[in-house]
Length: 452
Image 1 (cartoon, helix red, strand yellow):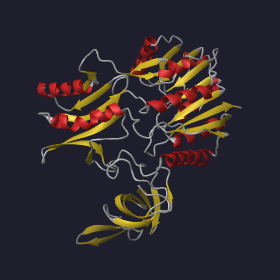
Image 2 (cartoon, helix red, strand yellow):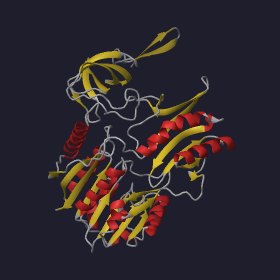
Image 3 (tube, helix red, strand yellow):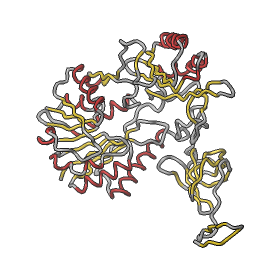
Image 4 (tube, helix red, strand yellow):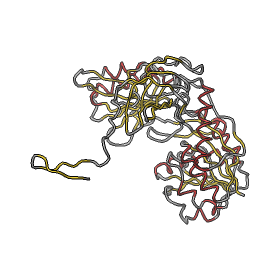
């Protein structure tokens, strides 16, 4: 770097020459889409830059508007189609153009499944150099009316003195006003349709943080508030929930709590005669139909026998552990958060499941020499978060498990961990996608590993 005087000061000049100007946000560009990325966006190349265009399909001639740009990567959204792909369909939801909740409604459902299967295969091959000995058919349920929980964005516009209610726009903090959402389960669609009106009728709408909707053994509305709600507003919300047949839950600085202390919220796992209690804030799969199919497939692949000891890692509320306990001699279930361990224990007691034991452990670290590890396991089930289970799988062969089912919400970390398992002698016997989030590019997957 050179220095020279100018006007009595120092000016630093970069040695690398002139910097290429960034593409401005809002700029429109005509593009020819060459292929589709793993997250469902169309890819185009212009003047050394790679454009990722949400809403565009392979082979299309489109106009796109820039959402963000950094270096040689431009993120954009479809504005206009000059030449459409034969694959394109009209998006069923009228809010699709602006809402950031779904990004594949313009793709027929069968093609969505094929895209997700391709992404899983590409990740396994590229990262781990693996392909399963057998591909399983996608697990899928209805493409609409499946989502049993949703977060609704709420923001008080001070200047306009208006409450915005809806979902976030893509790549933006803007709230898209929405009064219907076809991916919600039917009971929540009815509540959601009337929700904006009741929230805007409150005397202190600026006290609202956001709102969440839940559907299980009961319907529930959680109102998060940043300041105390006046009694009249609480009464109005309670009346709305009573009319809608929903529980009212509130959350200020502490944990969510039902307005009626006796209110119970849960979800059923009907094939196993189980009912699990849960509370707003707890992790629960949003797609009830695919969740049951997922558990059934996991049990079929793992095939726990009546004399076997099975390990369930990242067990949550017991979504896998309690069905596993119906077949195995003993299930040891481990979770990182003590409060979740206690709720899983309560779910076991309430369902008269006595052969499942629950423990807390830091699963971002290698498995410790805890007492529950020493005896070993015939089979292991893992259902980690998006970060995967890299530390846990490092020494998992020492547990003696002959079979392992890995449930993943991120194909990239599944592929990374699969490489580690392959290095310990496990073979990738079977893999397939779980269509937990239709109309989005989000991919969940299941893989079966066998020793030797």
